[in-house]
Length: 161
Image 1 (cartoon, rainbow, N blue to C red):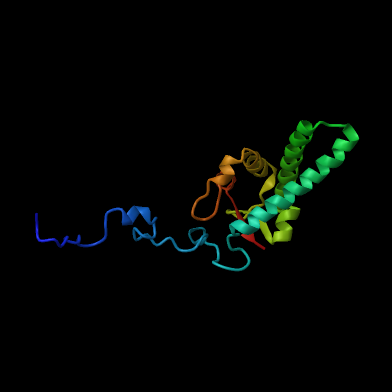
Image 2 (cartoon, helix red, strand yellow):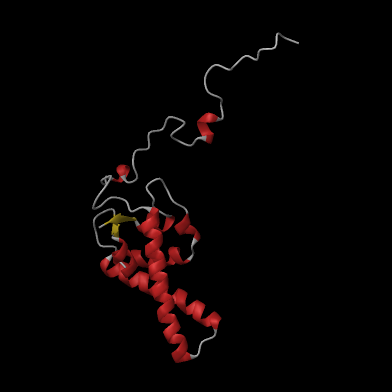
């Protein structure tokens, strides 16, 4: 046995560079949207998670409300109402995003969907985006610019108004 005092390793442990994430490894990532040429704050900056989630809940609630009214008219079962809520939400987000780049929930939260190339989102890309949102998982996989797979596929980004 040696003299009782443990020798400390020189420099950081090997796990500190990857357990702490990219910043701990020395990568300067900047702010979300910087590599896309967007401002850090204000109009045109990347919208945060909170406002996006609130907009989603508002839009889903509106779709649920419409489906509830239709349930009374068509005497749907709870399963049918759930399916129609999904259909209404998908159609609503597709049409609203394709035509004006914004839904009522997004408007209330002060955000909108724009294409990175400056063109309108349009019906084709809005459809691709809406289908991927309905699949849920692609919309939950984000990059460092807060773009989900649905946004990356449609070449869009959600920004502050």
